[in-house]
Length: 433
Ligand code: GDP
Ligand code: IMO
Ligand code: MG
Image: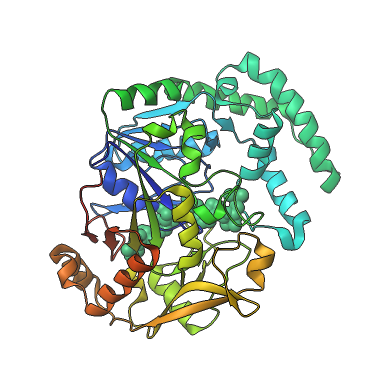
């Protein structure tokens, strides 16, 4: 049993982090987002309501203390919209927003689109939410932080300076672009006024929370393969979208972090561009996409789908020190036969021992598969009934499929998921948190 728990995705995002952060939030005091921004789309289905959260941590539906820590980039307009939506659903807002999280401005969104176009075949197919340009400004040390946003007299000169540079940059792509700096300033000043009551130093807050024995869930956005350091660079996002981002993104020392849970889907999905060795482009892909509802939560784009790739997941388990895995969307593979799982890659006739992180090498590898018998389609009521009865009620074919994953990854499974609802969950190991 651990006091703190981290939920990360081990693939390209959308593994079901929202569902399981909400699940564990039932036993937590505080839920923390520590990376990314509103490029994330985390879906929670509970008590007949479906929430789609972009920047608010997935503890919000349960009215838990929610922290947006310093590793995040925040679009204040989107955050305020989410706060308003939650208030309309009669939710109490228990938010703590880090004074050192970085602010996304409208010119970041514009630059995101322009940079994507210029990158040509190297573009990642971003969500165009200004994520890359905002993290770039953070690294270049001229970004604005939430502290600046809530102090207009400090914000003004910094914003003027940043705007001047960004305008010159945007004008390279689009010479006619201009915008009124005063109106941006006034708009953002008003966002700052509204957000000010939530702003604190979250590093002190979180260390105190942990030291006092309270339970914290850290919720990653995106997935390990999208991570800036350990993902498919450049076809990913701009933060450490895995457990490695926690310490820098919160101020919590590594030794206090606790257990790490890695979520995988029963297959693979990817939204955006870049390598996808096990991708399917056929009727099976369409069937999985429809059965799994594989359309982007943020952009609505159809997600690319393919067979489960355990070779790249093994890498994620290694670098993140994953303690347990969760397998989601098992129900979405219903009626597909046979099923395949990739267990390694072959290059020039040789089976590789380690996963090649370079996209150019992955491109010339051939995935190696094991085949499995599929399972029949069921109604939603039948999946719920299975979840309520537990592991023994699962069809043998699912048991064989998930045991093979466990053996291949040499990592125990904590939960299986057979539907989007909180109740559609099968517990295998309840002692992790
Ligand atoms: P996240 O970004 O990791 O939080 O995942 P998303 O919310 O973007 O995408 C996961 C989608 O799958 C959401 O629509 C969830 O409601 C849904 N989901 C999660 N677990 C399951 C499951 O076991 N079965 C089905 N059918 N849907 C699930
Ligand atoms: P959640 O948290 C899936 C992808 C984009 C693009 C790349 C870079 O819901 O799992 P960005 O806008 O971050 O610069 O885009 O990363 N991407 C995601 N894909 N789920 C996400 O978040 C994603 N966030 C970013 O499609 O390929
Ligand atoms: Mg998502």
